[in-house]
Length: 224
Image 1 (cartoon, rainbow, N blue to C red):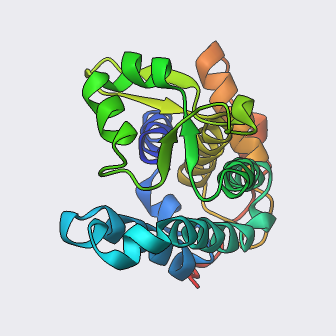
Image 2 (cartoon, rainbow, N blue to C red):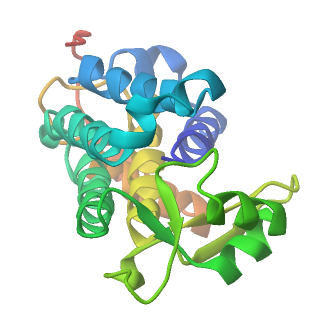
């Protein structure tokens, strides 16, 4: 889940435009336990001592599907946050459907992987090492247009291959972080759609005063 960079970008843009990390801290984001558990499980299965165990080798596909299910559960609890949260949920849903349809793996295009991450990574995945959640796409793979087919290179020299679902997740995460940092949250109010208009206004040189004004008074923090 490559959501960290877009979220940081959204926060940075909000701070430049007068936002505050204190506002971000007031966002009433729910399902944190399920989301953190999914990240932790996925991290553990990538650690060398664990990824070579019989448990991971024999049940890695089921573990990965469980990770995605936990993530979906956590994100679904934030449906009330509006369009941004729903875009994240949509992206996760697309990725989950692709993974389940392919037996617990996300197919990745070899040419795109070679261009973005290098031939060494292609060889590692082909040998079923290090990346139990990914497999090279072949004739048996399904839903390939929604799998990892988009090579993305960053200026810092880091690259990766993403999917359509990843794009929804990235955009939703960036706009949710932007809207939350720009103005204090309103509890169950729909605050992500003004954030999207604000990000678009920033990129086009227009302000987002009408959107900001619609956010109203601050709420209180609550993390479940």
